[in-house]
Image (cartoon, rainbow, N blue to C red; front, top):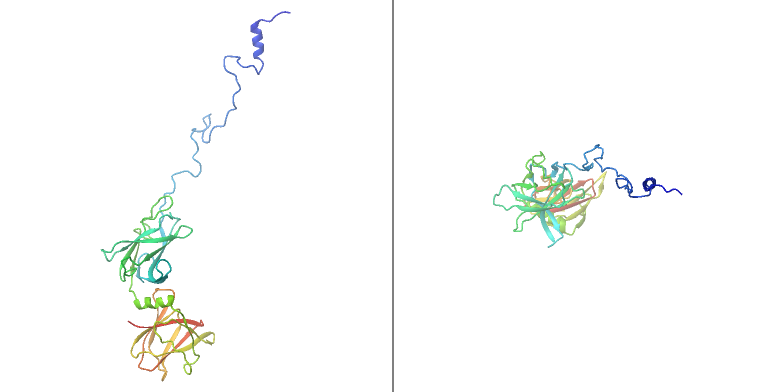
Length: 326
């Protein structure tokens, strides 16, 4: 048999696909080419820099603002206290003042404290006021309590500012102090007069046992009394037409000023028991010192044995407290 030259054998072998080591370059199997990363391709179709994605960018730079508050910015005549029953710590009657602030966007709810400044008394120490956030992170309720050293929550007839500049949104943007809602990042207001007698009566609505009274349909005969001061009466009136009306009687010190506190607005007519002569009185809306008192009747007792009080209301029940004026 004729033998082929060695060179021809090598050429024939290299034509087979599974023989490694042939040719000038390494022809070992290579992994398939991979697609280029997002944002760039090997053929020059991009820069080669990874794509930042749709959520990337400079971030939130919009400053939050106050869109509403209670009291409103610039309020005057704000009643300086609210009487309430404290259930935490040493339970009992106490005073506070509640503020609410609503922001234009959800806020960083880890910040819960504002600073209360007395602008009338420059020697007064700024006070911290703690707050609680609503679930949406936009509404904050702040409660000012009585100072540790004693005294009212807020002084009457004084200017105050609730500094809110420490609040920010989750991106760290501070409160917009130039927004018309506040102007300077502070909630400014002025208090009105305090009424200790009203505050005292509010205490009775919160802790006293109710004394039930059934009013008489007529001013004569058996008419129940509602003339003890410092007592919380609940008067039930008989029906009259589409509403309710009834009488109670009051034995009072002559020529003495009294206040009759009410839990809702009703018609009140006072007259003497002897001849039915009307007794001058006036009814007015009470400052919001507590939820149990909304109106009050002011009058001076005449020089008469008794006074009849006629209550007329669309409701069958009425709570009243009689107090002698200070």
